Image (cartoon, rainbow, N blue to C red):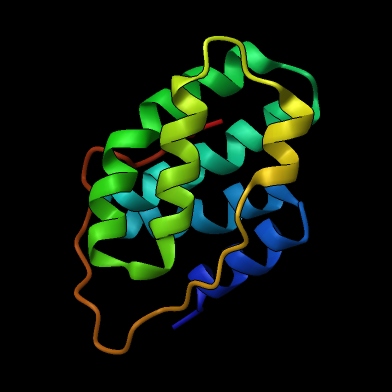
Length: 128
């Protein structure tokens, strides 16, 4: 099995948010996990911040915050990210440079024998 979570972490930590978004999307289509979708939204939000689109970033961060908090409860490596997204999504006017500088590093990896769920509603759906 490809270790998309580890690849996502490496790309995230290397500030390559478009590629991080892309590498996790196929996995999310297989699992349908809302927490994985929230990670995709976070990567897309950071890409928007790099491009100066604070409005688009804020919208994605607000959408990602609730499922990311639930995912972080299962995946301890995401606690810092969940706290960062919660704080960033509450900002009335996001500061792109500050958010990019303060985003936490990730250290995710695939778990052996993790259950896979099929996401029948996501076929062909793209998230940016």
